[in-house]
Image 1 (cartoon, helix red, strand yellow):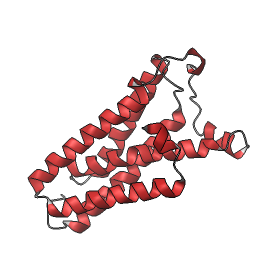
Image 2 (tube, one colour):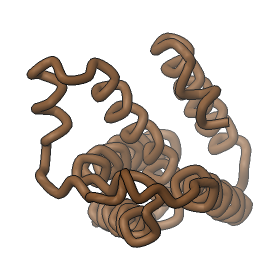
Image 3 (cartoon, one colour):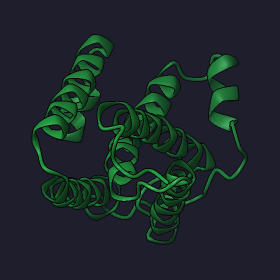
Image 4 (cartoon, one colour):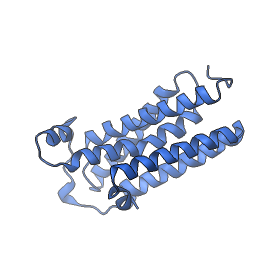
Length: 174
């Protein structure tokens, strides 16, 4: 499935993401608060399961890709020096991968510092995945992936917090 998504054009990917966000926002308007929390909890658990399957469980150990890339922004540097034009697509896909986390988690934790908590959780999850990939030789463990995933958590969390505060402004947001 991930390969199918990865081979789509940028227009297709952005339309799919926008469509999913619009569907999610619509569901937000029609669900009661208690049901909404349950729906988001299920969405978040499904998202986490898919991410773990795609990034860890479905991979086979590969000793060649075992050496981690721990230098921040090294992939960005490689892109701008012409090493591989696909690097930017990979980074963008890593950002997109964590937008759902930010959206769903921002609905589960709606207090004043929700965005900080959501982004911190995204950082923690992403770091855990990269550690599993590194220890299990299940792909290239990269600092840049953690940065991109965390940016995705920030983007998704910002969208979720904005919708929470603007679509349902009367609810308690301490």
